[in-house]
Amino acid sequence: MTEISPEQASRSKADQWRERIAEQERTGVSVKQFCKQQRLTEYSFYARRKRLRKQAPVRFALVERGVLPRPSTETSLELVLTSGERLRIAAGVDAATLRTVLEALRA
Image (cartoon, rainbow, N blue to C red; front, side):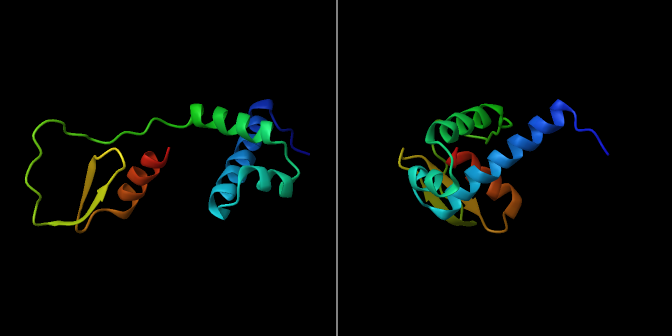
């Protein structure tokens, strides 16, 4: 039988909580309802979510401030955030890069 180190067990538990948190976000149900369905306490859900967000890898995006350049004719999509900032997405952008940027905005 293979022994599991405390680090592996901790990582496994963190992965389980990441999946639970992602599932709650995917389903769109309230945290309260999700916890009730999963027989979890809201306290543990929020505490784990907070802890995992602190451990998340640092994400970044290039942001240019100052005078806005004229919109490119190649821009096929412009996302306007509630803060008024704009994200211009060129045609042919790499899907993985776009997903990373959008996930960073959600965080």
